[in-house]
Length: 552
Image 1 (cartoon, rainbow, N blue to C red):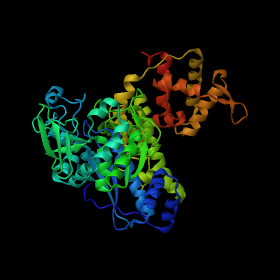
Image 2 (image 1 turned 60 degrees about the vertical axis):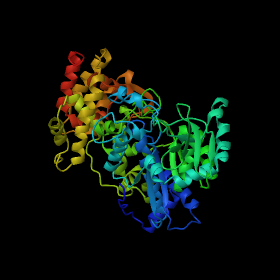
Image 3 (image 1 turned 30 degrees about the vertical axis):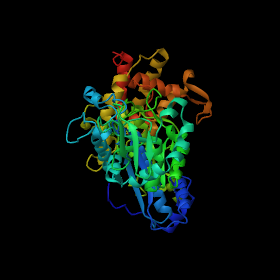
Image 4 (image 1 turned 180 degrees about the vertical axis):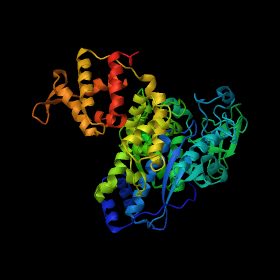
């Protein structure tokens, strides 16, 4: 949040030394920054920047830039013992022209007359208190970043251009006009070269952002001359919000104007990185340290897009999972393309809690590589989660639970003394599990009838479960299920060994159990699930499967 003080870090010497040697990617990036500023005034803040285009609703990729940049910022603070001030600037390119109407807005027709106007001049199709499309989308981004407690400053390109904050760099761009053109023209096709200009004037008659060639560039008077949409020659000062820069020169100019030290961006910007850097240098700046990450993909393997609205929104993820699971997803393998759709959520939830629960027992160097350290900026909370999220999902599936009370009846029997009051985090997961099951698992459940081999196996499993004590734990139940499968040739895996030296059990056995009893392709460890759901209840499930009631 703007002007919010940063939380204190543990700066013990052993931790600082471990951080300076850590191979976790945020520390590797932080060490590059330390080298960058070796000869600089230590009182001058290190500026981290993230860019955001409010041409559509913010998506998780936007959040990911802020989360990941914050992780690098925290790593930098630790290895420098928090002696060098830092800032994080979230910059919105809201003076860009609206080139197309997003597909996921409520009143597309209302926006048609405003094509190519700056996003801050486009009316807000969502209604409410915000006076422009950009203002609404900027507010959505800020609201979400604030819920995570990010320490950041928000900046609007429109405000920077109109208030004069970019006047000096715009005048410098006029002075270096030919040098900028020399950088840009080789990157363009012949047709585009003929009309290209790094300056985009705002038409004083239509209010649209114009992509027109310059008739005159007057560095002495700080003006440009161009033909307006009606053919009239117009001369405008480049200052005061009358003109903005094309997006590639704008990137480099912003770095030079603000003296940015670190910025990460997606792989789609990679081919232009050298252009951004060269423009920054032409304008007298030093390009920042970069970190190029892979793009997020939707369920079809396509790049997620603000205008298309494919993939996940921020609010959608948080409908089904806690915030920490989203932060974990951002931390892991930033340079690997990852699918960002609903089916990644359960795994992310369970992995987060696994990392957090393991954290206290890890040696110091491993703690700094644990995602939980980076998610919580070193202040990892104590986690006690008796039941994993995946198990809750299967419990909902087996019990057809429609409210928390049903699930808590099973949990309380499985883990006496565990209640919603003393385990609020687990209670929240129970709610997430019900919502996720209802929306994504239940519609795709498909039970199948057991074949003759499976029928016999299920009958034997039922007998084994009947012979177990009522309080049998997950390990005992798992052994009983394995004993059934070991005697059946179909389920023998000769690449594995059982405790008695015979063949092990193949995954086909448990896949059959999931398909026949739960109507799903995958499931949790069977013994642990039965211990939670109950032996009596599981036997009743087997009986229904044998009678054909589940497929009905």
